[in-house]
Amino acid sequence: MSGFRSDIQALRGIAVSLVVLEHIGATWFKNGFLGVDIFFVISGFLITGIISKQIVSGKFSFKEFYLRRVKRLLPVAYVTVLFTVIGSAYFLNSVEAATVTSQVVGALTFSINFVLWNQVGYFDVAAASKPLLHMWSLAIEEQFYILFPAILAFTPIKAWRHVLAILATISLVACVYIAAKDTSTAFYLLPTRAWELLIGALGALLATNPTAIRCARALLLPAFAALAILPFVRTGHAHPGADAAIVCLATVSILVGRSALFERLAPKTGLVFLGNISYSLYLVHWPIIVFMNNLYIEAVPASVRVFTVALTITLAYLMYRTVEEPFRGSKTSTRKLAVSLASVGILIAGVQTAVVLHDNSESGFAYMRRINYGLHGSCYAQFAKPVCKTSNNPNTVVWGDSFAMHIVEGLRKSEGLDLTQATRSACAPFIGTSPYIPTYANGDETSRQCIQFNKDVLSYIEKDKNITKVILAANYVGYTNGKLNMLSERGEEFVVEPTSREKFTRDFDLILKALKEHHKEISVVFPPPPVDNGLLNCMEKKISGRFFIGGQENCTFSMTYHANSSKVLNAVLTDLQKKYDFKIVYLQDAICSGNICNTIIDNAPVYRDPVHLSYLGSAKIFEKLNL
Image (cartoon, rainbow, N blue to C red; front, side, top):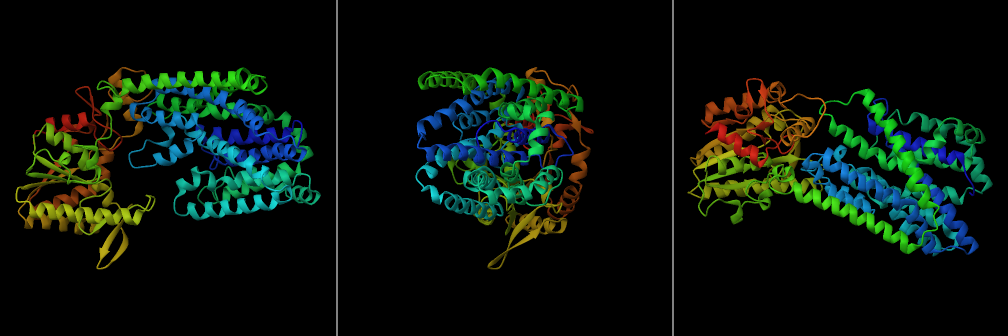
């Protein structure tokens, strides 16, 4: 367990190579993320080897252990975060930059896995736009390092293997069980990933056992085969799952079995070099890739991707030589180290605070592209509050999901309507049926709450004689294409059924009929044409005068996709219009001219995200519609 091992460094080189190639967009890789699982096993193996030896010899010190961890991990991490904060201010758009503060706090405190776990949601930005996303795995390792020494220190030496085996089994069972219900929880949290580190830990305790060594050596060939094949072929199981388990067992077999041939050949392949800089390379690669992707509005050319990998390796090597190695081998006192890290932390906080204050000012894009809740953030899932009304006795109800929220500003400001906002996210206005999204926490309960919410809204509309007009808005396209499921009431039971043109026609007919029976004037707002993140970046950078590559000068797009994807919805609404005589409001009439659609109107951003309007965009659109 002592001394330099080229096979371990080579495994680190393989692990970081898989991760970098996956993230840079190498299309031949299917499972590059398995590199993280290799890292987990190696970390468990090495840390257990160090601690167990010191405990057995009576030389273990918690203080010295944690001090070495701090010197090894924090200086490079803090420098990476500092440059990421500076880069984010320029390269990220405002919506993406708004999530950086929580990422920074999580990264500096090694709790970012919890931050990312909590950020999973409807209005969350894409994972590919979070420059500190990759530090979730380092957070898991640090949390393991905090707890694990105490487990070994306070467990009898003879019981180590049994205790770790039990803990690994519990963690694995929890992972399998939770992954089937909530993949985000299983992915991001230590209790469901600890089994991978514990496999490495068990390997370290068995590394001197002759029987274990013989078994590991017998498995060397299939272990290397697994590491060579699995990055290219998926088993079809959710991650972490079977793929991760196979890779972890393969890695620990190589660590315990110690192939002499692999140790001899590894330094000649460049893998040991990559392994030596693997920590720095892992840290710097992802922010650079995120910034590269944000600089380009269209697909990044292959040549630029190759250059980015070379740049990442170069910067990682410089970081390794100028930060990682000097701090790891330094005799710096605890006080000086703490002062240095605190100084960098304060600098990071200062830079990020300045960026946030600017972006959140009324001239900043974070403000202009804030989540469009309509009248108030509390109208996200309720309508009884006074803040969800423009007066005490409004005559109009805007009813629907987030696609109803984002039109309220335009209706209030440009049309001057006196309204009640009755909106709930992912809850289209139907009677007795609701979108069923099992990936949401408590998916069944969420759907039932939506059904009850719509019953309450309909009852309010029917009873309030002041209400003469109802405006319906939702992401109706999704309910006509068969890609979603619905939870529907059937007497005392609830059943899950797929969306379809026929089901949408029946469900929408019911709501129109109920409103017409109470003599309400009805308008239906057609969803706006969607855009992609490239166009959002183009829109923001064009307005702010910032540099970007690719795309076209005016950040416009074709109406063709929207016209094709909403063809069924348009046909259904047109047919129902003949029956119930309601008005259809087409937002594209203000956004598009012919087949060309705009992301910018009068120098204002039309969109908040790929499918929702900004507050300014909503107002501008209804000004142009002039209903």
